[in-house]
Length: 252
Image (cartoon, rainbow, N blue to C red; front, top):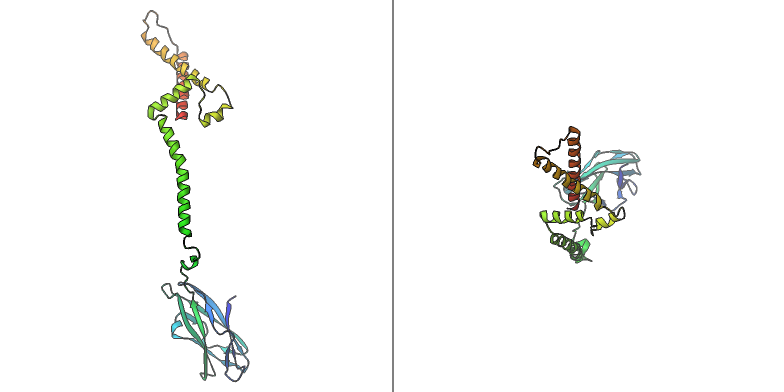
């Protein structure tokens, strides 16, 4: 239901008298906005025609769907208020009511739009709040970045490139338990985590030794290898190699 912004009373005090229930009205809109509202006309006398119009400031911004209604007792007149996209933020004018076929004319003030409030005015009580928030953010950022730098420095000092990989591989080969937090968590799952790696490295070296031995022995003492044995050796070789590479990648 459309909102009633004004109640106009005619013929109550005398013939063709005009009264307004509100001294003025406000239509809150922003540029590009539109709103439909109603004006109620209450007639205390004989049926008559009235005419509605606006001042020069509001022409083109307030339009009446019926500007010359015939009023018996009560009549609702719909109107549309709009502000163009590039229009003024606030426009003040008047709506006029004419009765008695032009013998009486009276108007009431209308404020169309909203008073622009500057963002700075809403923060008068706390002018330095933005600077304090910026300082707190900078302090928290530095406190978080410092441990990260220390952790990065300690990781670099432990070795980089292939040197770091060979050191990790040597520690795993000896079967020692790593002192990193991840290894301490895994320690509860099993105390002999380095044993499978040692076994894989030993099998890998054994297969490499047998491979070179096969080609270096003289023909008189050379042993024969069947297809099944070669397939088994290949599977073992791939398994050991894959396991060792995965361990190396896990340590990087």
